[in-house]
Image 1: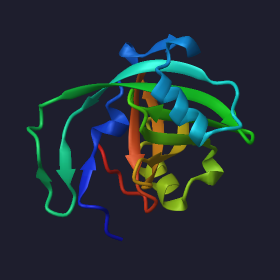
Image 2: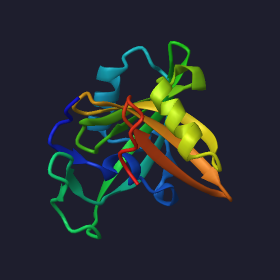
Image 3: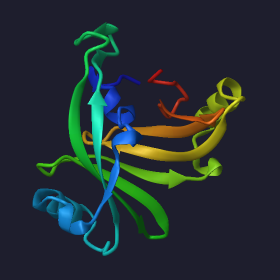
Length: 168
């Protein structure tokens, strides 16, 4: 299966929890509220956070070329809403001007594709799985995210449906 040529890798893992701050609905910009209400019209209750994401690099998965220096970072503020919809825990990340950047749906282990489960079992034995989710980015690509913990440190790892880890 071919993946689109460009992928802003760190958009999924560049969120730095140290910068996240809980905010009230009154602090959410109007374009963000409008995007949320348009995407999830039946959701009336959500918990909001403002976060800063570090975008590390653009990467071409076909030629394996970086388009920015490996250690170059851009930052971007985003708003994240956590909510329940149809009995599922979800979140959505929205930029200040309104575009939805990604949505996540929390999964249980049985909902993971077998290849992702096998990779987690084989390559991350020493880690405790805190949470797993599907991540759908703005262009509709679906990935699987595992939040892992080891010795008090957390990290998020992304996988394709065939179990390939796509980020370090």
